[in-house]
Amino acid sequence: MVSAFAWEPSGSKFAFVHGESPRICVSFYKIGEEKISLMSRCPCLVFPFLPWLVFALTGNFDCELNQFHTTRFIETLEKKACNSLFWCPTGQFIVLAGLRNMNGVLEFIDTSDMTVMGGPHDHFSATDIEWDPTGRYVTSAVSAWGQKVSAKSSAGLMTTRNTAES
Picture 1 (cartoon, rainbow, N blue to C red):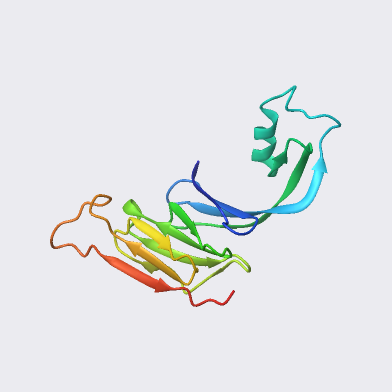
Picture 2: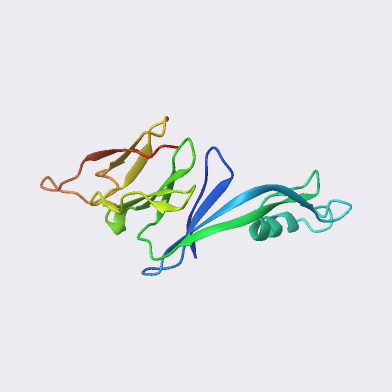
């Protein structure tokens, strides 16, 4: 079961969260520049579902040019405590976040070499994650309407600086 999907904002990668607890995995793929021709005329006229099927299996389908972009598997990260994905606006970095019922576990991944940056971080009961437009800072927050909180709870805001060099 796929529970989250996200495209890299400025690049050609995508990631998705799949599986069920406790075996949740995150897989990364890259859309290639090379294209493969399918047939001499557009198959969309005969089989309207074909572009969706082929896109799901191989990547991108360009109906006008009748070509598929190749998709390359990068890596699968196994046994991750996440249910949401947040790409850095400049690309390359992604936050794997276990929001709401996963108690705010945050993992920062550098997708250029698939390394975990500094191990998992915690922001207990986090409900929201947001990158600043430059990609230097990440903010996580606990919102009262997204999480049951009381006056004695530690609901709040946490900002982390992305110290990796791109």
